[in-house]
Image (cartoon, rainbow, N blue to C red; front, side):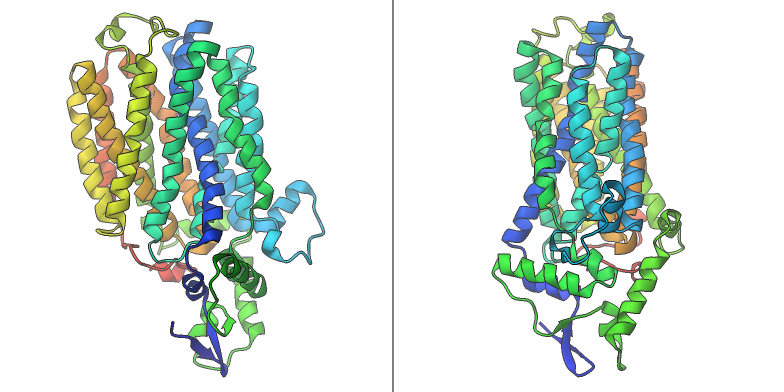
Length: 509
């Protein structure tokens, strides 16, 4: 490693430090917790494809009321994604949680085990989701069920911070493959939920499925108190000493060593003149002050250097969510075959295993999708990976405009879900990489919020249109969403493959 020299002594930047620390046991522990959160989120989302038909049958709901249950969850996720994303980036890791818990003294606790903005998102999922996911199982009527599920959605809205939190601990080398590995936890959650539904619902009913599925959220709550701050956030907010402490802890656990010299701001390392530590701290302090306002992060997303990226990402996230949840919900709607169009309810729900089998099979499609994205993301880049998989997903969905045999339908849904989850994964890597540290969580959070809007609309298409025998119209809308997303990818300004994470807006130009 080429160590730089500033003011007569050797120095190194954060990215150089992360490269020196490498990926080891420390990041594995971070991955395990972030993965648990992603798995819990996936289970709470996937459960929607199972409980809808049973709630509809038990309470005599219409198709519109059935789809509204899903819509309300995504409405909560929309609120949560905006709320947690904005607050995470603008009020600081420790300071924000102190506001919630009225904590005023942890000043000398060295940031290794201090409060974190990303941890606020983790806490929102762990506390809000676990409590209200369990309460959903006790819902005495339809109104309370949708209210509880909406609050669950608000908790799930903090989910994107898991990927941001993990990302900021990972060195640039092979960052893409590690983010794909992180995404496998979502797929594990979907498969686990399909398996639980298959086992629990026929024997105990949908309420027990809701109760059992909340267990990972409670586990995340218990383990939450072991999470720590990311060195990148500390580094960008002038807490160089605290960032060094975290990096030193990482190196110790990984049994590696930090570069020789002193950790400094990237601005300090780029100056050719004498530069005192107090001046570097002042520059970072000024940057922190500029992002303190909740609205300032949103304005930054629409700054001249980021507005194009922001709008294109919104189209991509909308299309990904719309098509992904469309395939998930359509699998349930199409599981009864062609006769579905001639009945207003799901026949023999408790004994008919086709729903569980089909959802389980299509959930397995996410595994080859993740393998494909892992192969492509660091070989041909983020942009080209998405273009290839959008094209394949478009082709898989096209024949579903027509009535086909059940086996063919499930095969096509399998293929479509494989490519769509691949796109979802690559976009989840690409989005945080595009934004600078000061607005990374906000940018990813708002993009996910746009995806939640798609999730709110999706049930009206996947449930209402398909159950009303308008399958061709539904597939046409999903194909349009995929096509627009693929076109948007072509217009992204940069490729982030092998590119260091940016810490300022000017680095994104």
